Amino acid sequence: MRRITPYALLLPLVLAAAGCTSPEQEVSLEGPAATSPGEESDPDTTNEGAQDFDASDETEGSSGADGALGFGESAAFPHPVGAYEEEFQDGVAEEVVYTVDEVASDGAGGVEFTLTVEVPELGRVFGLGNMTVDCVYDEVAHTATSDAPVEVETGTHPMDMRCQAPQGAERMTVVMLNGEDEATWAGPLR
Image 1 (cartoon, rainbow, N blue to C red):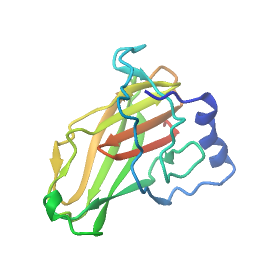
Image 2 (image 1 turned 135 degrees about the horizontal axis):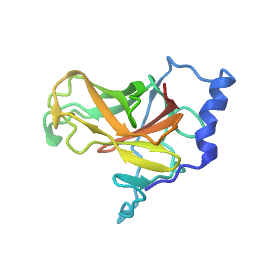
Image 3 (image 1 turned 60 degrees about the horizontal axis):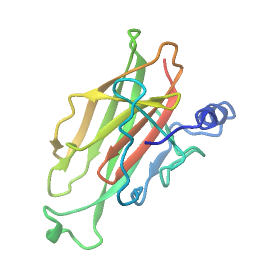
Image 4 (image 1 turned 180 degrees about the vertical axis):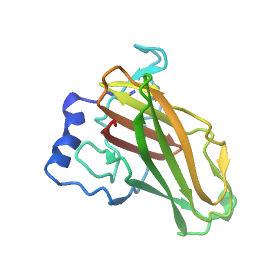
């Protein structure tokens, strides 16, 4: 997996303090983040459900030097229009938009947040069955749990998610991967 350097976690705080970020900014991500052939995630974990994480491989097109969006900001990915690959309309794509917001500690060793997926008219259902969402604290990732459906129709789909949080955690990074769509959000915990 990826490992976040301590400096990468501090950068969003510095930028926010300097007033260099805009919470209303929408970001369009073009092109998927590629993985090397044969690349596998490390099965060794330091905690149950936790994995090492490295943010040096930044999300292409995202805001912030560390590649993370702020909570409440949106990441958009183009998807071809058509029911089947052979029916995709040449050069016609619509954007699927992901947003992480309503991030808050539950006071019982966990963090709850909402991942919203806005699906345009694609002429087919949109798959979420292989989507993974991780919460990262101090270079350790915990997989988020939710009642996310396997596929969704056109529309806005908020999904309540929950993950473990270390005692005293003040910041969190959320990493979402759904097929070729990959986005990272980071911010303080309330």
